[in-house]
Image: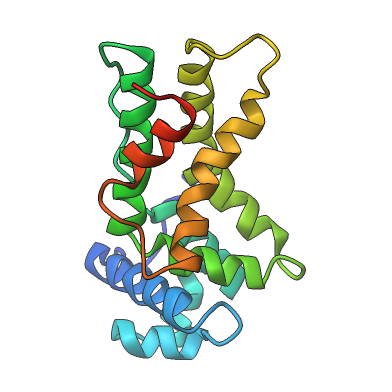
Length: 186
């Protein structure tokens, strides 16, 4: 039985793979999903459309690869207290929002949610849910009453970053400290 990864011809150029994902991420963030095209991505990456289509059969598949390629820094594994851990997770979330074109890409995915819900779900699964889960765990160890809705609290904390970005000129450096301090004072 032959290896499905083995192909005749030249091996793929990893630098071209990277250039394609970089061009696609830039266009997804700057132009949005609807206005990015395989042709413009191929041109920006310095390749041809057939070469691009050998890697990605469709624009949706390429957008999914972009989402999968977003590299986010993992939050620390531990902290001295549950509150310090929650704060570290929120700071990590903030750092990741600033470091990747995540907010711009998220905007594009939200605009395409009706046509391509799988792309937004992939973003949630890959980027948001791991941090929500860790934050929910840290909050569960906090001083909140048993009746506290930790899911709502987690959504409020994570969502505050998006809301702040949309309603003001950006997210201040101390936002994680401020928003956590609102619900879990020192």
